[in-house]
Length: 211
Image (cartoon, rainbow, N blue to C red; front, side, top):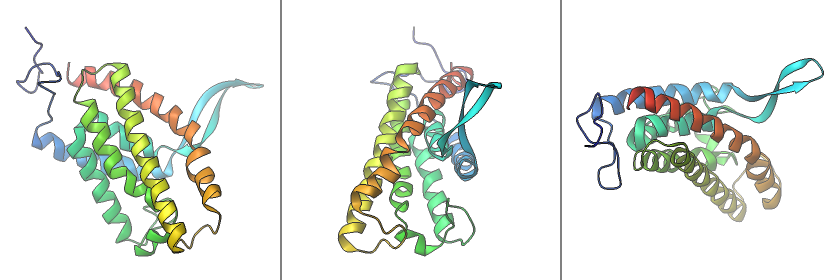
């Protein structure tokens, strides 16, 4: 007998019967995802380690923003995660407050980072789709997060390439190779560390909430 979800009367997720989040829960997770994404912009990611003064926190050089995007995908599913990121982009583009890391407003589309923000939408959707397509195991959740991260970087690099070819990127007058280095390669180790943290947290929470 397959195990039943304590909240939703559907079988344990499998390739034929993936776990689905009901619409009311999707709305809630969309709101949570929007809040977490905004908050993640302001929070720098750290990792614990031993130093001369004992246990210390070392900066990963990235924020928790991508971690928030992937976490909502793992917990709320593809629709909630994607809706949260659409709302985040609309809020940032219609506002001149610091919703994005370097401000907001329509002119932010000329910022070289904007392509990565656009990548939040497919990245969140892919992460959420895979996370609920397979059983909630560490390896599957890690794969889901890595796939989402790959989507974010792929769209970000595509946006950089397009902006460079059309000469309409105004912030960061650097070569295309330097842009790839600054916005993808250098932050990647920090993002991978964040993926590890999201995998563990989502694994624990999925089993508390769903199994």
